Image (cartoon, rainbow, N blue to C red; front, side, top):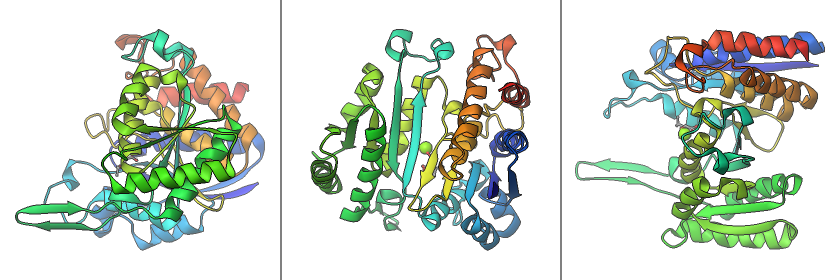
Length: 355
Ligand code: IPM
Ligand code: MG
């Protein structure tokens, strides 16, 4: 098949991990006879430096016309001064909004070979396999922001429709998995959460009576996630809770650098990015973990291009590479056995060819 993929390397370690993601996509195209047009575009801080705009018009247009978008990471200290008027993050939020990708899927699966890489006990982690469905284009991220000399305000709004559609995505996913949905809110305090709980209960009863639904307060969910992570199947939550809890959940897998994400809307077009940030502290050293990005590329193949065999082959290649100790320092068995970003990319490509 022919596909048009917009590629946004971004800032910090973004270009380093995206380079490995691109090698994998090219290898998949070659092995399976596809033609992927991969177009790299300026985005984030890099685009601010070029044009003053984190999401230049040309980049936005290319993303809107693409079948899928692969993104590295954005942000860095040079664009983060409190008084800065333009920020890389504004570009990311504007892009998510413009693409209409309201459902952010963040799967967390513990690789048996990495049980020791986590700070948590292996017996707690064994068999963990869950997916977060994070609402991505609403809530406090997108509400009105005000600032005066003595105070600051961030408004959090959710509409009934926004909750309905994200709950449906999560419930459909739960149907294909173990049939268990946990909805996370703060309904003992927040009005938006009371709406969230009400709408979720109604949609689930009316449309998904066979999927079990449990409501959980976000503070309690943060605790249960590390106390008994195996019990979770699909978790659905609002934008900011999802942001925070998925960083926490990444430690179940062993490293923030391992987790991919797929952001989806109504059609098949999607935005794919690792959940980690630009990690300015390790940028340029060639030690960033490319797995989150490579696995995001696999999600792109599956969800936007419908290439599930190719996606599975790439996921298997990553898994085998990890098993055979092709690991960056964040998950290496010992420091002297750690490989560079590129060597891990090499190992994944070797396994992919052998598949
Ligand atoms: C993420 C990131 C972003 C978010 C930042 C970079 C704006 O933390 O994708 O999880 O908060 O959504
Ligand atoms: Mg985050």
